[in-house]
Image (cartoon, rainbow, N blue to C red; front, side, top):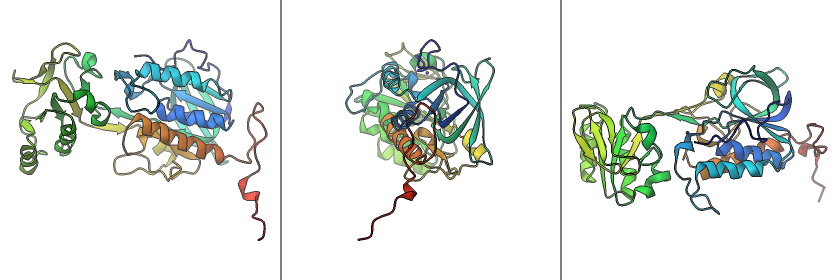
Length: 348
């Protein structure tokens, strides 16, 4: 997932984080960056912790962002990084939050392993306390077990029809996946593809029943029982997928849907309520079931698109910042506004 948004050589990354902040944002993808930007606009002391493993870094382009044409993830993150530097109260740290607990005084304590890697690197951990938490930890995708996947992923192998379906317009698409949801997933691609063929990833998938096969046939979606083993052709010139039995299924694009797992370990450690898919339940202001903990982006079940992550991140950032009215903050920040509850409506 090409150029990490938190380059250890960048002055956007803080090697010496503060011991206490108003808001701790966990996750440096579109949602987390948007949240940090808006908390910064409210002049609240903020630390954003970024492991540098955003799921869209493998994509060739980010599409559908108003005001910009298709842009590479590296360009997108560089532009956001430049904008974030305008807010002196926002600091960034490359690393992983390994533990997060809530104290009796309602402040949160995070243990952070520095280093922009998924294991936190080898540096000594640091501890930061915060009044509020914004979780933007996203999801982890299960990738196909295919020879050549590292070179093709993001080029002609994709997981998101809404994100990359238009790039497959008029093409024959191979769908890989396991489970009862696969036919519905494949049908989404009919909005763009000239042909769709499903490889069941099994010689006989019991979750793929006769009714589903009949529905696929009704929509001219071919179903092939077999296990995909190798991508055939160079990246950008995909010819098809070779199965375990040697057959080659022709196609110039592959979309896959196995499973993606919400990165919800920190949320569950705090007692945040989860939905049936493992995503965090939130209200209209992105507040979770735990007071003081907000969530945004793919960790909240729904459409997983960059524009939506940016929007939910903005909502979480604003709600989080305004919830702190009346609370003292860092010395570099102007005195806070009086708490809203102290205002009374004049008698008419």
